[in-house]
Image (cartoon, rainbow, N blue to C red):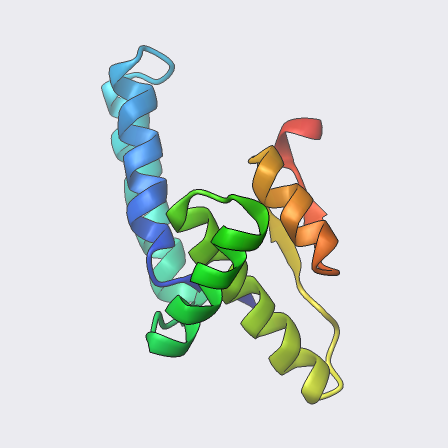
Length: 119
C-alpha cells in the first residue's frame, strides 16, 4: 500500500509543471505524467488526512528540524503511518523523498527513507 499525505498530490503536480516550464519535460510528457499520477492516486494510494493533530505535530517538527512547512506536514504524515503500522504489528513504511533536510529529519525520527535521486 502506498500512503500519501493529503497535500502531496498538489506538490507533485506543481513539481511536474515547474519542471516542464523550466524545460526539463515536454508539455506532452508533463501532461502524461500528471494523468498517470492522478490515476495512481485513485487506484493505489491511501490518503493521510491533514487534521488539527497532524498540523500540530508538523509545527513541532518544523520547529525541531527547521523544515519547510509542507515538508513538516509530509514528515508528520509519514510518522502517523509509521506509528499506526507499528501498533498493528505491520511492517514500517519507507519515506520516499529527494529532499535532504526532510530525509535527515525522517532518519532522526527513526524512519527508513529512500532517495530516488540515488538510483
